[in-house]
Image 1 (cartoon, rainbow, N blue to C red):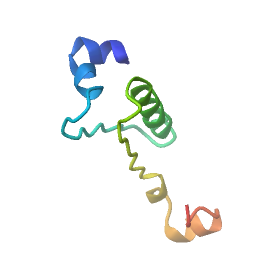
Image 2: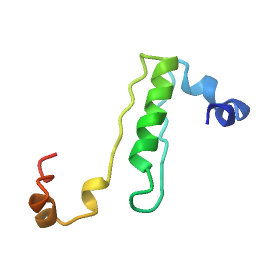
Image 3: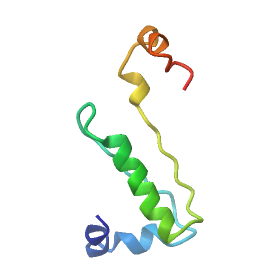
Amino acid sequence: MLQVLYEQNIAHKLLTKNLPPYIIGVTGSVSSGKSYAAEEIRNVLTCFNPHLKIGILSTDNFIYSNEELRKKDLYEQ
């Protein structure tokens, strides 16, 4: 993945301090590894620049209704 970023000259920008925020979208079907991919992207970027502030906005809780989330004891997570 970093090779692609370097080829597009994006890696230097992502790993440099004091730049405007970036939004990286990860899409895919249910249970395809989107959350895992997002975590790995965060891990790689923070290895190169531990000062980066990286947040992950997950939509995992929107797959099920609130009732179903309560049944699975996931509602409060």
